[in-house]
Length: 217
Image (cartoon, rainbow, N blue to C red):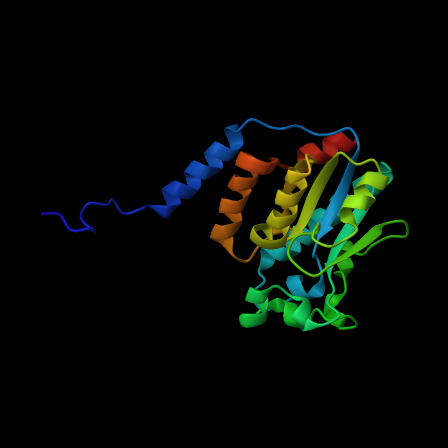
C-alpha cells in the first residue's frame, strides 16, 4: 500500500521555474495600446531601502529611471502610486495583524518619499493609496480617463503584491497592461516569478525594457 508521500512525485522547483518562464515567453500577447501612461508603483524609500532588499532593487530603480526618461521625452504621462496613510488603521486587516513595511507609511514620515533615483518631475502625477491596488478608493481611474489612457506600462514594487494587485484591477477595467520585467522588483523571488507568469497568462503582457524603449523611439 502506497503512502501519500510515495504516491506523489516530488516537485523540482528549478524545473518548474524554467517551465513557467518558457510558458510566459510563448503566451499570446494582448499587445500595446495607442495612448499609454507609465505607472510607477510604490518605489518609495519604505519599499526600496528595507533590510531585505537586494541588488535587484537598485537595478530595477536604475532601469525605471531609463524608462521614465524615455517616456518623458516622448510626452508619455508618468503616474506615481504611493502608499500614504493618515492612520495605520487605514491598512488592510492582514497588514494590521502582521508585521508589515507599511508601518512607516504614515503621512509625513520620510520613508514615504519616492526614491531619489526615480524622483518625480514637474508635470508628473502622484496618486495616493492605502492598500495594494492603485485603483481602490483612489483617483487613478478618473485620471486615466481624463488623460485618455488605454494602456498602463508598469514599473515598481512589489511584483507579487502592489504591482500584481494594480495590474489585476487594470485588467478588470479593460486597460491594456505592459509590465516591464527589468523595472519591477520583489524580494520574494519565487512569488515574483509566479506573479509574472500569472500576469502574462491572465491579465496583460510582460515585456522587456529594450522592446519598450524601441516603442518609444
